Amino acid sequence: FALRLPKPDTLLPHQILNEVASISLISARCPNIPVPKIYAFRADGLNPFVAQEYIDGEPLSSIWTRYTEAEKHSVALKIAEIIVDMAGTRFSAIGGFASPTSHALGPTVEGSKLFKGRGKFHSNRCYPIGPYETTKEYILACYDKEIYYYTHAPASDIDTDFFELTSVEDFVQQLRVKKCQLETSFVAEDEPFVLVHGDFHGRNIIMRGTQVQAVLDWEFAGAYPLGELLGGMGVDVLEVVDDKSEEGQARIEMVPADP
Image (cartoon, rainbow, N blue to C red; front, side):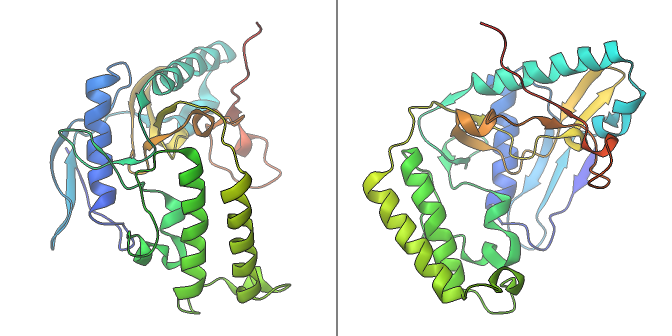
């Protein structure tokens, strides 16, 4: 088995609960998406951990360049099938997963809610952390998150490089004005809420040959609008080495099928 210990900035207990619950939900509702078995976990306390099945194989990001064109096409189809399965898994609201047994929706767990000290404010006392009944509610909460962060975070957490042309105070005012405009005028598209991995790329897809052995690292998964899953983006299958490296930018593009 593999024993995983949380990093210092892990959002406990939500991040561990979210991953364990996501894997449990996928095993129950998406049997064609391979995920590791979870043997034991502790989401809070002195020694949080996840003990899970060890998956023997190579990350897609390591093996992609060794595939023939035919093999790449075959693997791309398998990745597309996983995305289709996620798109077909529907939910009643936007949120993360709070329970490995009931799969009830709970607070969203996102990387954007953790970096630069944002994790300290992941609480309904600071801003609504979910679940959210509508896309509009979710978007407004994203504004609330940033407004709260920039009005409460210590100066040492704030990246001053972003504020060469404006002050933090002026930026916060811009956020407040934009949020007020959205409250009165924004109408979200009628999209279903579907399963989104949150970190879906070649490092988290474990292969044996051209067979997908497992999709790992569901800690940022959740129920989100369909556009968050598709959104015109591809799936990065290689590490980005530098801006000029064609290999480093290889990705499986999600192109709409002809009607």
